[in-house]
Image (cartoon, rainbow, N blue to C red; front, side, top):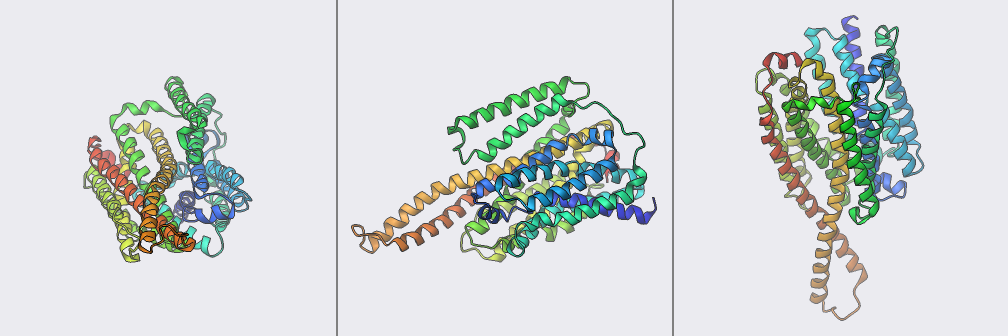
Length: 499
């Protein structure tokens, strides 16, 4: 493959990865629009986010088997075609239920695209150019979740939220055609027909699906005051235990869990789960607070969220370059410390805060994110033997997507619950003081005045609750900044080969 063709292929793979990751966040700021259009509550509409993330997570562990059976090129083209088709279905959905179903299809087709893109880049790129190629790929991975809220906000306020899905249709279709052109020489003549671990896949689907349903319906059914959620929790735990037991004994396990015998990888996985979950929770909470408490439009909220990209795109190549010369654990600790500081700054927000002051934490988050994300992806692959890197890649991506799904449901539920408590206290206090001041304690209350007070109390309550949650998120990130030093330092030679 010529140099020009390799460059085009890498650009195509980066674009394919970009749109898959983009769709995990593009609809975030448009959730109020989706809820209003489909007659649902904002908490119910967050299923649109969760369902995509969990469906994507289900297919990530299957990527290795799918590549072996169909070949990387066939899998890439097929997934892109399905992604384009399911995106069109999402845009045309007439109810929240159908939109969630179509988002599941979109997530199932998008999940394998990330590991398949990595596989093909490693296969076609010359060793001397691999560093630059992977750097470009990682920059798209970092930029996509940041660009998503901005694109979603602009589309929601102009063309409509459905165009957040319609936008994927021509892009994914063009990528599928481009993949046929660039990788037609990579087609295997005789695809493998290796056995798939159907039992393991079944157990995986059971416990992940039960977890998703519990997270999605928990708030509306008052969580564990409902017997249904207790049953879902039991199915999740039992399904997870059976899944782990089966995968540890099956010779052709769909997920190689024996990789957790490497302590460094176990710590990497835990750090990824907690840190990425905390980061994604902050990513979900911010646009909701801006729109529901501050009255920002989806476009304005998206512009603020996109502020992370300003320093993020600059820091990404710097973080990749420093990996050769600086202990990656130090880079991770530095990045997580910056992320924690930016979240702690959010804990002091008030309803009177200005646009410029809101942007300061966003800029800091963009600076810290690459210093965490780039090293953790490299470390998770270098603390295991070379023969286990494929399994490590699948598991770390699985953990990342599951963490995002849990964080989405958890932060919305916590925010709503805390805001209700704070609102009740503020509303009672404000109403009592106002009535006493105007001498109306025994008279008929002014309903318009009460409505204004109630609206003001809600804004204050949502802000106070967001501040409280920010403190918790900041503490989790600070703990992770210390926990990374429990990861054994990888061999310098292996680390250089990754970058």
